[in-house]
Image 1 (spheres, one colour):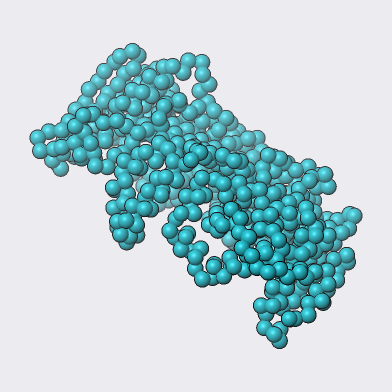
Image 2 (cartoon, helix red, strand yellow; image 1 turned 120 degrees about the vertical axis):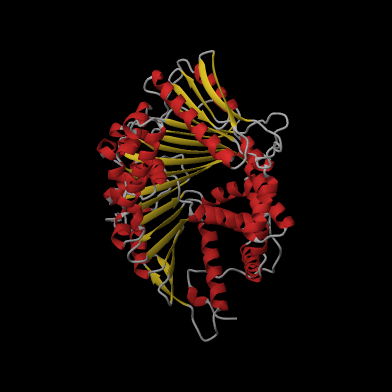
Length: 611
């Protein structure tokens, strides 16, 4: 046995005979993998309110250089991992065959055995070790251009931390060749350093553990830790100060990123152009592109609860400086607000967003490259023809108020109609500047259906019968596919009964008559209810309703998986069933884009159902 006395303060731990101490959580390696990847890879996500570093119970920003490119703070790593391990969705992920196979490879099995031996030697399982060794925070920082990385753990149990590091170094030395010393130990002020050949360094200073891939960075961290006045550090950076002002204490972890080094390096250059050649992306996410163009920093945060998880992304943005071509998306001075979500029962998903469709179309020359402008100009000419020669952007789209909504809902079928592939109903909801403009849209809708009938007739498919009604304040034109001789109700076209409905200034264009009528009836009941939200755009998805519509198409999903992935039927059925079961465990998923006076934020909130 090698003499390890030179390790000094990295004490050797008394050897114990191996025993299987795997507890209930230790016996769940997939959960561990999911937790670690989620909590540590994306896990610095949602920002946490911090005051001055000296008074903040969880703070490590004073350890890092002022010009650090990033800073990650996780207040309680073990609790976050333990909460994620207990999610029902985690157990579903653990049962994935691919994950099970990956965690039973020889390399992973050896790692699990080594972990078991280490736990046995320390007398605690890995989760307890993590709780007591990083109970007062995990902090990561570094410089992108210098490829420098520093990590710090602040322990509740100094003695356990001391034993764990000593034991780890002992294992490293035992695994190295007999003629090679893997690291050198040297004293540094009140602590000890273990310095490896590649300059990676580990240091312990009381209840603090420091790690870095560069010795110089670690010693600077140690100096700031030990000095009464740490001097200039990350918390003095103007960008970092601004980021901390936008954080909240309710968040369990947060990540700060200085964007200037990324710009200088040319990394993700497309991200900072402020433009995209895809009209759909511009219409949905142009505000984010605008904010990123000149933002000095960005931040992410994570909030973990027993039944939900929240992720927030923030970027500074002066809303009063919205350029004219982007006012269609953010509104004047960034005050554009999406319509409030409609309370339509049983919806699979709803999207509501502030968008001035006319402003988007009329500013296409300022938003896109020439080839995209040419295509949109051609479309403009064709659409103007459909609307009787009236200019599409300045007259047709200008007839709509800013603010659009999309509603998706499972549909019920009439007797004798049972399409092989079931498609949910989908509706677009807009409000007219003047209700008298409804006539132009109704006539254009009828013209489009006529053109569709001509096309369908050429392919020997059923025609659409149109019916116009006016009842209880709702004016509706609806189309119905009627099965004819030689046709049965299993064709995909029987998912559709295209309709347009008007109620006051509301216009609803729907794939089915039932949903158009339901939304029109709902708009009548709004009364004095708020018609706008606090969001620029919001997407809400119901996991269980989504699972239901996918389950109705299970056969098609299985066939598609077999075709794309080359699986046999049993494998594909197992994969699809696992997907459906997992979706049932997601109660709601909400994505919320908000603009405020000095920042733009994107919040994702996922709530879980109980098993």
